[in-house]
Length: 406
Picture 1 (tube, helix red, strand yellow):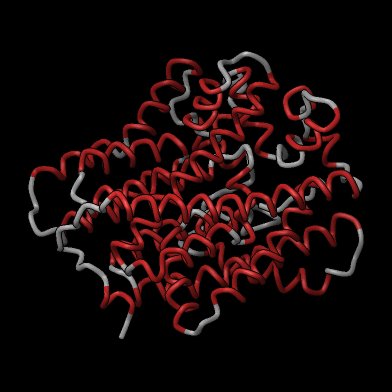
Picture 2 (picture 1 turned 60 degrees about the vertical axis):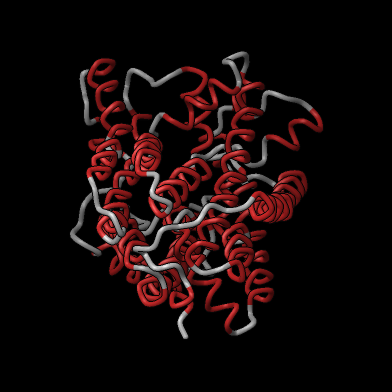
């Protein structure tokens, strides 16, 4: 019998969880968060202290923002403040620049960092960036536990959390990145829709579209969930809030920079452009094939080969998982995963077609719901988590030494 057969039907009315069950969900979320983030932090600190950083640090770092402390504090707070974290911290401290190059980074996460750090100092903002990410990740894990209980039963809740938290690209959930926030609002939007809280579903979808442009895609599964609900009503109008985040950001760019769609034009500035539906998958296969032959070479050629092979590994996993989600979970979950993957796979990056695919997959929580079902049925959950944790450590090592991961 399929796991989805055990689930509450998509048209059923969800029951409220007793306080005891909420405590179970919160306890599971805490344990998974602490275990996974301690692994990431331990590996990152060890790598940053023991291994030499690549030349990318001199090219892309902003020490005043990412290394405002000395001694132990620097060792704890700086190893994960790399790459896009520099952009988010810069926006939180300085606002958006006049050149508009940073417009590709949507505003909700840096705004929350600014508020949490009270704009007091770069050090306060760095600490706040971790706090926002970790609190959001805890909330996301808690809501995901409740959502999995609702759809599949408690048996699959803890495995889902563990498989997501130890996924190789999950290192970004505890870094100064927007991944945790996006995961929180997207899981929250699903849970709100499944429990009939359509105002919350629309508001959280709006928050998602203020966190990254792909947040607008939540409209697809939310409309499916509404259509399959037992009492279709005008509550669907609340989903009109979904574009509010991206609309507000567009208005801001229009006023501040006289370019309301700067984030679209900047895709080309970041070497990402539309090549046709799913064409990026073919480009990724071609790049991985070439990378397999160049993996042993030194310098930038070998580095790019490694990245393309890792990206292709994420693609294979995502393709298998997407098919599995369609087969084992309600249609809204499959539609969400498909729509979310279609976007990056249609906008490949020159030289590294599947760039950042690992990060895009990490926030697709239905993938880990499906994976939990498969692993539990075959009693492979602990092994899968262990293998994933090893790969997580490897990617964290690369990231902490300023090697590009995603």
